[in-house]
Image 1 (spheres, one colour):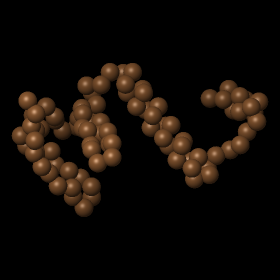
Image 2: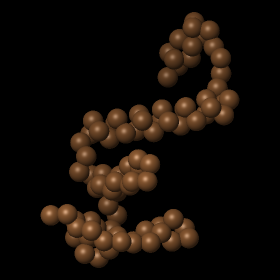
Image 3: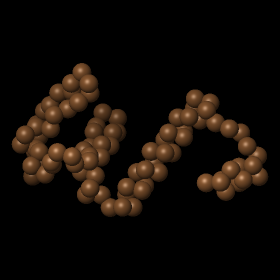
Image 4: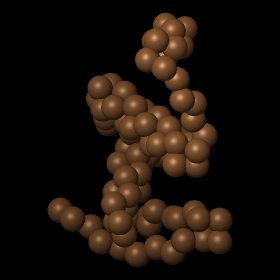
Amino acid sequence: MVEINTTKISSKGQIVIPTNMRHNFKEGDTLLIIKNKNTLLLKKANDLDEQFKEDLEFAKRTEEAYKKHERGEFKILSGDKFLEELEKW
């Protein structure tokens, strides 16, 4: 059954999950928030399998790297130098 309710965003960007929708959540739960344009999807992170968590972490790191690239915060390396740096990881 789909439940629908409304809430407001505070000046700090916080939201309150309405009481009638909190029955599967408890204090300290980690929540995954996925944004697509004007839609937010909220899901308990502990319900996710390990592979999805790894994929999500990879996506976050990729997005951060892309933003650094857009800001010009990157190095230009030759192929050989890149492989040397990669070996250090």
